[in-house]
Image (tube, one colour):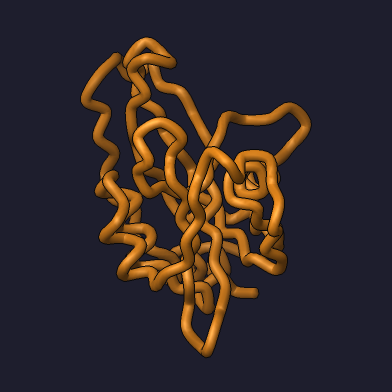
Length: 164
């Protein structure tokens, strides 16, 4: 069993150190995010959405949900924010940090990222009129993101290393 865990760790991206610039280490909040991906014309594509307020490119994310695993909560956010559904894996690809000063008293937010292999792209979804959705290569997606740890996770994402 230890060999399997070590082997999987070698296949996944290396986690970058977290940057907790504000707040104390006990003032941290957690969110779950979906790295939405598909294969099209033999190439990996990543889907980004815009944030509601500043229209920055992000991946779907949200707060923990009662009676849902982190991967399932991330999948729920992918549907609500991007109109995507598919297979969510209970494998945390990594973690990134960001702040939402107005919402949580400037406490840092640690966001855990879970892969979602997209099997259905909906034409209607709850936040369609508040966000834009766009598919692109992992390299291009990483360049559009702001958070360094998330840029790294997306740029180094290799779905064939997920073991499924």
